[in-house]
Image 1 (cartoon, rainbow, N blue to C red):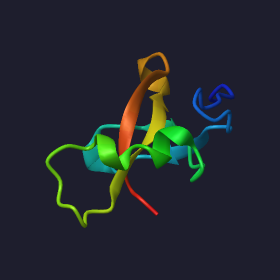
Image 2 (image 1 turned 30 degrees about the vertical axis):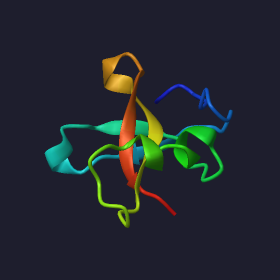
Image 3 (image 1 turned 90 degrees about the vertical axis):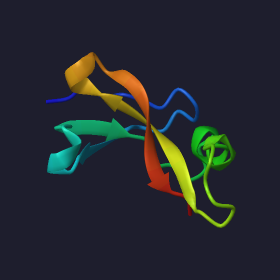
Image 4 (image 1 turned 180 degrees about the vertical axis):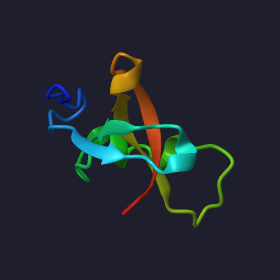
Length: 77
């Protein structure tokens, strides 16, 4: 069982998500809060993307790697 973790940007509880087989991830933890400042500001941080591209990043942690954090590419809503 994974420990309970919270997003350092908005305080929301991170939710469990199982990555697709080709990702190499097992279960990861993701902030799914659409109001999170990390997520809301992420669209402008992605370089070399089309203007009309709706990609952003969510805060995520990998329990298999000591809960190290990373940016999970996501569709921006």
